[in-house]
Length: 108
Image (tube, rainbow, N blue to C red):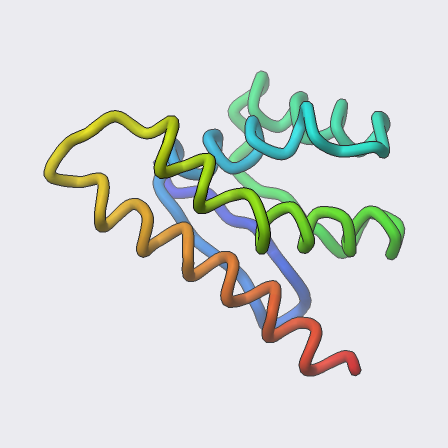
């Protein structure tokens, strides 16, 4: 199943359900905005398959972007199982990280 994270209108990331869930499950315990964390967990628990980051308050969006930029790839390197697909999964996750940086350059 394909899933979608809308970073900003016109900037979205489509991934396999597994990488989508991995990304949201990475964010849930790290977010200080517990309401946003619960919302992300509900997306995973109910297999909703899409998240619009623009629906979160600006401070939460910035925290999500910071977590993705600074911690997602190291955590994925540690947590994803060794397999022939690991390198391509990491590249795909890096595309999401890159989108968060594009969002900043367009806004600022």
